[in-house]
Image 1 (cartoon, helix red, strand yellow):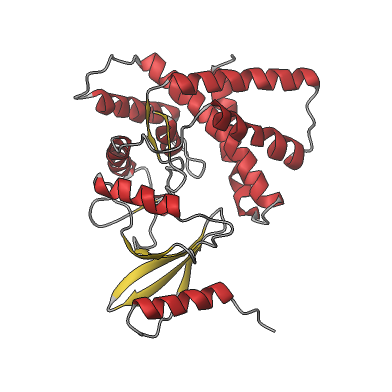
Image 2 (cartoon, rainbow, N blue to C red):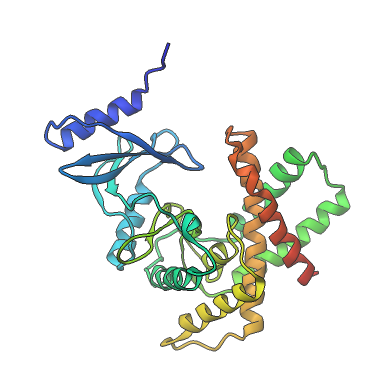
Length: 312
């Protein structure tokens, strides 16, 4: 016997009210690494994305407030056409089905990454003083996921007291490097699956509800050392330094040397990738989402490569 999807039925009823009694036929669009679901529906010849975020697990308020911040600053994010925060329903612009991951290749990478970095500059210029701070406690709690979920749960490794001390020392180095950087608006998941190819104002940017005020290089390393697609180190460093130059241009700021910026970039990537190994493992063992395990090797290879160049 088929299980009735009560939330989907409620969403359809709400849409019928929003769209003047028109019968609504909705189809699954995508899911992500949370409890949110996305559907697609058409109204008067226009396609929309419908967000279903169960209030007991997902709070829509940050997404709504951050959407307004970014949209006001000219960032290409989905416009919110209607909302019901009590039920956890939103009607959004539909950016289509083509993301950067499915599009990138050696022939178009320069153009697409240039557009993504220009968009990131606009994101970073968005006022972020009211966002949560990417502070020491948050940075360290994220890295702890590596020990709890990747080492212990996924690999079955229990560190000795000495190994635990060494890991904590590494965490401290990564935390200090992150906190030394200039701060800016951080999307916090700025990568090829959250950048949609759009015919104008490319890219369309999604999944920014966890934004914080944090280290300058966080979104940049998320983009260029993407857990889902990899590029040669020399190319990545060239892109990173071009971003640094663009960031400094027109600002009354002290120059940041290539060596210093790439050091921040490398160590920020280590912090993120340690967290990601833990999150991907947790998604499998706790949330029953095994699909992310396929991306563990690429993420781990970043960690090994950068660690070899920074023995501290």
